[in-house]
Amino acid sequence: MKRSKTEAQETMERLLQVAREEFADKGYADTALEMVADIAQVTRGALYHHFKNKKGLFLAVLDLVQREVSERVASEAGRSSEPWEQLLLGCRAFIAAAVEPQNMRIMLIDGPAVAGWETWRQMDEIHSMRHLREQLDGMQQKGEMKQLPVDAMTHALSGAMNECSLWVAEAEDTAQAADDSMRIIETMLTGFRR
Image 1 (cartoon, rainbow, N blue to C red):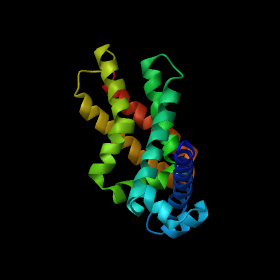
Image 2 (cartoon, helix red, strand yellow; image 1 turned 90 degrees about the vertical axis):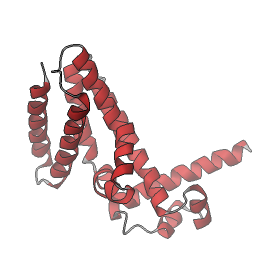
Image 3 (cartoon, helix red, strand yellow; image 1 turned 60 degrees about the vertical axis):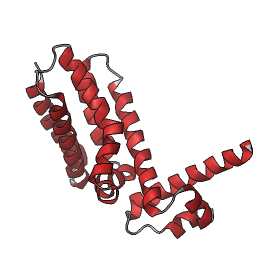
Image 4 (spheres, helix red, strand yellow; image 1 turned 135 degrees about the horizontal axis):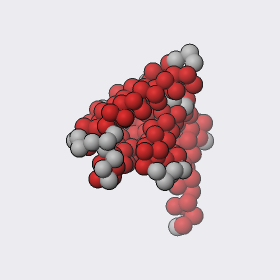
């Protein structure tokens, strides 16, 4: 029994890895489940056993991508013990991770379209916005941020980072665009800072 659970887990992880590569490379519309199953060397039945349909597989991949980006942001922010620096490091890490080829199309382009805004925003809330809100709220409670509505600050900053990430990804000089984006985000955050 344990062996079959282990095998099932390995099959699911292999499907997620292959699907992530296909969705990132070809996009949702041009990714065929048959191709995913063939590359993963599993039957279509095994694919449907783990994921109800193409959208179900995509949502699992989107969740994986958002979780990885969130972990990366937390890791980068954790390099500092100073809250302001944590916030800036986290914002920079988000933009850097979001524009990577294996993440951008899934998370920022196809994600909202395929999942729908409500589902996409719920996933974003679980993986990213919750942590951002906690950081801003903690800073506000310590007197480091102006007494402004934390939810509004969270949504404004999250929206700015998502939009900047899309812009950076399309820029000719992505490094310069990322630096420019961070200057703007830092300026915006300075307006919130006490």
